Image 1 (cartoon, rainbow, N blue to C red):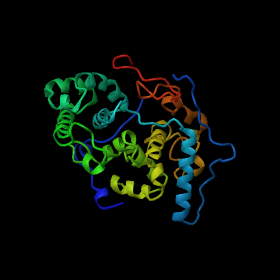
Image 2: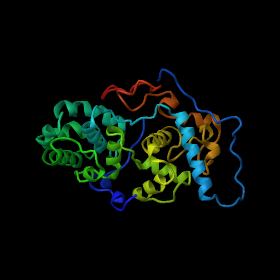
Image 3: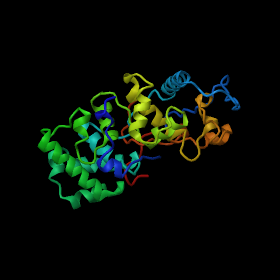
Image 4: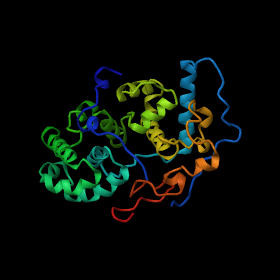
Length: 299
């Protein structure tokens, strides 16, 4: 990756960052493979880089089987809606964003409309997402920049996206990967936490994490890898209490045992469709096995 590609996060992303949590038609219940029981850790030689790469790629293949329906968990119909929704997702759940954006896009369907908004009126609409004053300022700023500098269109290059107010590298990669099909690795809190647990990197800085992981996988895998890892972090490998005993990739995890290892207790920790509950999208993809999330006020 070039020096320019490794620019640090900017705007609202660096000030506010993170995502978080929430009865399906079918309820997948992951179970560790019978012939792949985690073995007690023993004193062994440090894992070589080559062995780590092989293990990382196998984890990706296992996640692809576990989450063949992995997708961005923000509702959107075009690049502008995805850009706005991703900016709103800082320090709140995708569910809350998805419950808020229908009214927002009904009021301001284009960058030109949003740039001309009355700030106090926009603040009322996006208030449920938190930090609504800072987010209103960013949304109006990025909409003004799109109107004035990009003819009202969301640009399809990272170097252009990161010039927009409130847009850093993470948001840019979300938009590029899912609206423009340009491969990118999205390092949010879930992704960073899991790749460190799996010993793919020991870096804390998101840009360095992105560089380390990008070196392990072919470019064609970057976008879907991001979705799979985030899905796993939200459903099974939680921050405070990972469901180790219900994790299908436990045999490949060097951090196995940090969470609940009893299979029955671990299964109770599963979330979203894995735990038999709705997902975060009000309009999920057709192949999503869980139930749609409820609209605002219907929870």
